[in-house]
Each structure stands twice: as structure tokens, then as C-alpha cells.
Length: 491
Image (cartoon, one colour):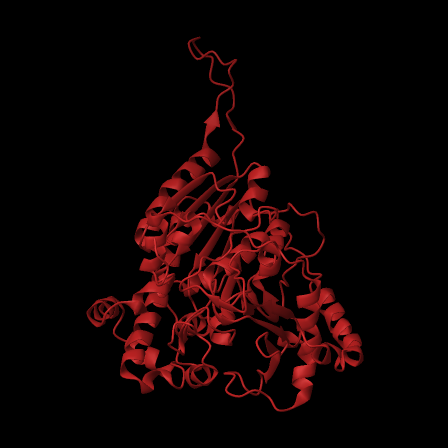
């Protein structure tokens, strides 16, 4: 599958420094929790299709969510394990890479989500909901994304599932759930031996009943959908945004985006959708705060992948591998940073606020949550909780599971990044400190060789999950088609 020449070149000469770097990384992760008891509950939020650069630019400008975001811990260099929803979310929920959990894979030399059903989650992979359900948590899924209810297995462990369109409806469902959770948290019971009918005999002191911890997962879709609508609908979405947003969006647009009028309009709508998502997050936090649940809940926010707006259009046209026949837009087609550099943010009473520059993978979210909830028994967090003096120079993250085109795997080690294409056994290297937009592959071999062993080690060492099959109902298929997937798949 991989050429012997590629697998043998300079690996032995580089393996020792790579191992040393990994050891340093692990040492950096030996951080401790703030001196506070673990939180009772978990709220995990995914805003689908949010680029890190847009999300953070809005925070720097300041909005209603900024006051909450600045109280939490921001990961500046979080990398998604895949450039589209199913394999990425499965990685977050299982703590496994796609090659292990099996969700979102394709057989053959090329992936094509346009007409082929991806593989479901490996039944042997335990989800976060299953783990917490076994710990007596109440589990509830509130989602706008049809992949959760289409039979691909990522809903495993959720005892209650609600599907709605639009963040307002999703938050309404969450609000009702929080009412129940807060009620259970505050309900008190009287001593059964009390005799209130006897004059002068007051009830004995009340005590809290045993409450059940909760895990709620919320998945919104505005940044995935708004910019894909027709021009009139996009104008309506833009009208909802504040007057400053249009010029702001243009000022932060990728270099090629606003050279095309239509793509620029879609970009502005996309930024408006990310802004709308931040409003939704503010409302979620207000709901928690009003019920006195904010101080006893671990909140983790992430996005599963980003979106391309002609960031690499010319490159994609030259490569000409996307089976859909269009290039430089959407997601699932590449492993460039606009698709895999995503927001990751955490807030909890036992985690100090701040930011982390170290490279982290969304693969670490599940074990980190278990650690923060006091369930893992580990003495160190799988995710760093403070910056080191080395910053982004540390950290390793793997991304894979392309949805359209030849299979790819990328590895990021500090500022060095490599993308391996199985078709033609080609490897491209980038130095992100010098070329943050990945405009051209590095010609200096050291960048490629610094990454190459990491990629090969991953491809060789990760157990290959069995590629299962899934049967999707016509109703689920139509919902997936409605958001742009499986356009060539017949019912």
C-alpha cells in the first residue's frame, strides 16, 4: 500500500528526535486540576462547520458571548480528526481515530460521499454517552444534524434523542431538559417520621435527595447551512446580523474569496451564521446561569470541521480529484487548515481560564472529559490546561477520512505539517509558521521528513476497524440530501 522507498527514507535517523518530542509533549500534559471538586454535569456543544479563524476573530472584536468565552480555556490550535461530520464527531465521542472507530470510511481508492454511503461506527467502540450512562448519568441528545439519527451509530448511549431545525428550537428543548435537571438538583424530601398533624411538632430538617448527573449534547447547524441557500435567502440572513458585520467579514476573508462576487456573498453569510452561533451559545449559558447550573457543569464547545471558500481553488482544480466536479468550496475534500483547524473551548469550576497554544487533537476530548469529571482515575489531563514556554512547537495531531477524492492523511507536529496522498504515494510538507495559509508545499526536505515518520507510524500502528455497512431509511436519506450529502444516491 505504501512504497518501501517512502517508508524507509531517513526514518531511523529521525525517529529518535521524534520520540523525544513526543516525550516532551506527554510531560507537558501532566497538568493538574484547579483545587475544586469535579463538576456534576456535562454539556457538550458542537457548532457544525465553524472555522477557528472566524470564531476567534469575532471574539476578538467582542460580542455577547465574549464575556463567557474569556472565563474559559481556549485551545488555539485544536485539530479535527477529519474534514467532515461523521468521522470527526465519532472521534470526539469515542476518543479514537477514524481508522479505529470505523465511522465515515470508504472502500476503494477514492472516497465519494456524493453517491456512496459511508461506514457506520464500529460496535466495539464505546461512546462518551455509553460511558456516562454506565456511570448513572442521564443522557440526552439534542441535534439538528440528521447523521445522528440515520443509523450510523453515533447516537449510541443517548437515552433521549430530540431532532430539531434551528438553534432556537434546539435551545427550547435544552431549556426544558435543564428545568428537569435543576428540579432534581434542588428537590428536597422530608423525614418520613415527622408528624405535622401533632400540634407543635415541626417537620424534621429537610435534606437533598440523591440527584442524577446529566450529560446533554447539543449540535447546531447554522454555519453549515446558511451560506448554501439562494441569494435572496442569504440576504435575509445577512439582514439579521449587525450593520458592522458585512465590512468585518470582508476584512477577514481569505485572499481569493472576495475576488468572486458570489463566493464573497456566501462568505459574508457564513460569518453571519458563526456570529449567530455565538448568540446561541450566549443563550445556552444564560439558561444554565438562571438555573444555578453553570457552577456545577463542565461545558465543552467544539466544531467538527471548517469550510473552504476558494482558499485552495486553484490547487484543487490542478489536482482534479473531487468526484463532484467542483473545486475550492465546501468541506470533506481536503486536509488543509481551513477544514481541520477548529474551535475548542472549555469552561468548568475546576479548570482555570486562559488559552493554550499547544497543538491538540479532538481525539483527546473524550478522555479529557472523563478526567475533568473525576471518572478516569488518571493523575494528568489528556489535554493541557496551561501554556508551556514552548507553545505551539509541541503537540501532534493526525487528520484523515476524506469524503471526496483520494484517501489522505495529515500529521501536524508543531509548526510542521505533512499531507500524505495514497494515490501516487505523494507527500507534501508545509511550515505553518512561514506559510500559514498553505499556499505552496515546502521545497525544503526537512519539513517533509520531520512529519513523514509520524504519518507512517499512524498508518501502520492504528488497528483498522472493520468497514461495516449501514441501511439508511428513505426519510433519513432525504434529510441528508437536504444538507448537501449523497446527492447522487438513489432511494
